[in-house]
Amino acid sequence: MKTPVAILSCLFFSACANADMAPMTDEDMSEVDGAGLGIVLEDFSLHAGAETDNASLFKITGIKTTDGRDVNIEVDNFFIGGKGSANFVDNGNGTSSFVVDPTTVNIGRLNNPIAVNLRDGDDIDVRAPNKGVLEIAHTELVAIDNDPVWIGATMDPCLKAGAAECSKFASREAVDGGFRGERIDVGLELNAKFQTAAGSTDFDSDTPLTIYMKEAVFDGSYTRLWGDQTKTGSETDSDAQRNITLANVRLNLYTPDIYIASCGLDGTSCGDAVHIKHFALDLIVGVGEIQPAALSVTSDGNFQLEVEALPNPTTPEGTRRLQLIRDDQSDGMTWAATDKDFYENYYNDTIPGVKTKSNLYIGDPTIANPTFETAGGLQVGDTYLGTSKIEGIQIQYLKMTTHDIGG
Amino acid sequence: MKIKIKNVLPALVIFSALATNVQAELAPIDDAELSNAVAQGGLYLSGEFSLNEEGGPIQDATYGDCTDDKRCGARFSYKLGGNDSNGWYVIDDWKGGLSFEGLTIRTRKVDGNQRDVTGQLVDNSGNPVSDAGAIALGVNDGFGGDGASFNKEVLEIGLPSSVKFDEYQYTLGYASHASPTEVPTGETFQQTNIYGVFIDGQVNMSGNMLIFPTADK
Image 1: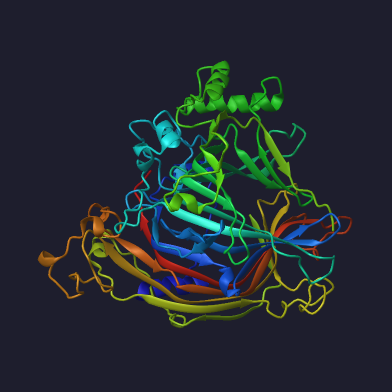
Image 2: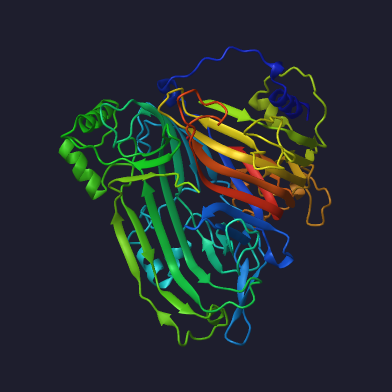
């Protein structure tokens, strides 16, 4: 084990090496298309802030009410585990208890791991020409019955009735008494505490909210990051170009059950829960270099997130970006034959390699005692809220800027 | 990218299994040699880390020793490029301690067989067996049957069973300048804090993180 120690000591004591470093250009970087790192978490579980021993505390601070009182959001009983990591147990009096005891799970598969890659921006599914792109990706989405779409026709029966299609993701279900699977149970208890008066050390009584998501699948989710000296879409020709972090994000989430319940602080007296069966989200933020999400900090110290609008052909900035698309064609990356076709492809979600539309499916939300189902009984007296489906959302333009409101 | 670290005073860092500064000459190992290497043992680490517990090294109008209203945590700020129209990402008031016990690092062969920590093939009772007698685990290999076709060495990081945090905290924000003490005359310092995080207590974990190279994409 001499070599790793030597490498570590080089990290800590940099005198070992003496080399002249030269910066790489974007073009150089985009040619690098090396092997990436695969990561698999094996037999994994995590449990933090168990309220029962009252010793663990994870809280988010910095929020204030209008009259200057602090609001702390405490996170208790945060866990990540495998199937059956938590359970609502019937107390027999109309309430239930939320009991957390994480089982273990694998996250990522050996042949389809969580991957950290330096991608070539010229790749048709990346679409950031002449850039090196850092990609952090979850298990890749495997086409289900030749249907590569996350919530396509094939997934429809799964979302409606929990049919066999639901079991066809690359991340597999746990087998009772056997393989622990790659689907993740995750949950936490959020507890907003309000300071009784500004400057006081007392916080008022607890208002906890328990959220529990079963056997979640994140296949096909990724974050891609690269940098560019540019300006965001809302800035005009007179604005200087800045160094901006550009991102494309895709979040895929499928879970057969989400419970949102209000429980006592010790988790023993949960009332009725909102139970959502078959929740699926396919969220796209940013499309290649044409509509990236731009992350930057302005010179007055405010964070800005902007998803650029599509290029407007009547403005100089829009013309410049449309020219980028034409330049890409000469790099062999087809966006569309003409500018008009580009817009048509964008709105029809037919640009090769990338998706431009997001989808959300919420199946069968009910409000009921969360133990009724696990006890195998009928859901008597519950409230059925119906199915919602939001398809084909396209982010046309998004800009968020933080502002310091003092206090 | 510009990075600025200010007011840091790490009180104690112990990596019990790390030897003192080892001087060794590094020579590349080619793939053929690597494939012959069989891991023996590995590293077992426990550690404790504490940052600015009683304030940082700087004592001035802005930074103090945690007994007054001044900032006493460390400050880490960075910005992209040297362009003046960019602001700084900031991790501010960063202090507290954390300790862990039982982080392990070793290499391990993952295939359809069962091995002990030294890489020796074993049967279900843990007794050494020859290659011919190896127990092929099939779907019971811990990876749902992916192991046999994977058949590679991986770097295994055994996660510590618990990590203890001692009033570990930081605030995430964005600022106009690297530090409030480094503002040129005529300019004003502005910082927007988004949220703070405070952790005190124990996080329980189990499992291994396996790291391996993947094929070109």
